[in-house]
Amino acid sequence: MSFGALSPNAIRALNKGAKMGGFAHDTGEGGLSPYHLEHGGDLIWEIGTGYFSTRTKDGDFDPDQFADKVAHDQIKCVSLKLSQGAKPGVGGVLPAAKVTKEIAEIREVPQGQKCVSPSSHKVFRTPVKLIEFVARLRELSGGKPTGFKLCVGSRADVLAICKAMLQVGTTPDFIVVDGSEGGTGAAMLEFEDHVGMPLTDGLMTVHNALVGVGLRDRIKIGASGKVAASNDIVKRIIQGADYTNAARAMMMAAGCIQAQLCHTDKCPVGVATQDRRRGRALDVGDKSERVQRYQEATVQGALQLMAAMGVTDPGQLQPHMLRRVVSETETRSYAEIHEWLAPGQLLDEVPQTWRADWELASADTFHPVRPTIRRS
Ligand SMILES: Cc1cc2nc3c(=O)[nH]c(=O)nc-3n(C[C@H](O)[C@H](O)[C@H](O)COP(=O)(O)O)c2cc1C
Image: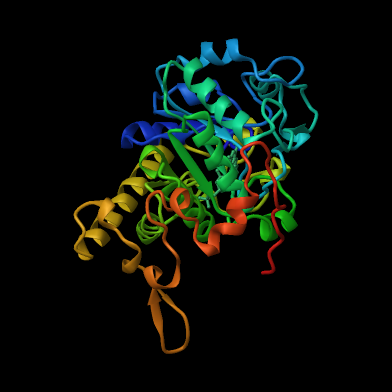
């Protein structure tokens, strides 16, 4: 979650909590701010379509600025944002009221004007160019782990990216799959509620596609979308994730009361505002401890759940360990309900169920099929 959507004190509390707990803090697409760097917590630097903090005057990606800033020791990973679950296909929006002098300087945009990041990247237009750009970011960063985040729109798009990896001969270090149930500080409700794949579908699609093309062991998968309690972590690992991220749950730990006033700059608890007087409502010392304790207790709970399941390593979690109610009297396991590809299967003989999407997918174009709108 960006500085801009969140206040200076919220960023401080999250980063200080991350430092105390030994976990990482994602900057969001709003650029690197001094508040990310005050407490020394590990950072994942997210680069969105606006290239904030690393852009030229025309809004293009600036490689020199990037190389200079990414060298900071606190930045451990780089995450290229393609899309997020609350608004796939739509860029970020920071309302004019929140574009203060400071935000304008950090993002390198005009003050007091609505800050809209484009809906797609200028730097690449095709899956091959995406993979080449990820490789370029990694090179510019001196080899720091580099990946991308997306909300899946269609299975053919995911396969197109897999084909691009095979063609270019390189892979991202990680892919974060965001579910359509994800949150935001600003988006149309129609997008929030009806576009993009829910996390369960998106995650299993990416996991299976990578297994199917024989690249799963080279790429970590992160999962986000209402991951708040210990059981969410265990469930997402069973469905194919290596790790999970949390946004809104961390906002709650930092004091969010869901007043739903993020877009008005009038957050009453100082979490989602650029008004300095309102921001003072958030006590960084107290809230950073809550952030740290929340993360620790949730991860500890996940370990306890796994122990109760007889698992000593998350890698032992398997689809048959998760069950779903399918009728009033029946439950079935994920191993039974869903199709799980074998390593390299898509390269040997594409199963009938994947054939149409595999044939449609091209390393040279996105959107062979447009994402569909979901009925709720
Ligand atoms: C206030 C707010 C700001 C966000 N800003 C960003 C952002 O800058 N970049 C991004 O990729 N996702 C952003 N997100 C989405 C989250 O990172 C996350 O992908 C999504 O909310 C799902 O996680 P959750 O259910 O744990 O909130 C934001 C979400 C919220 C609530």
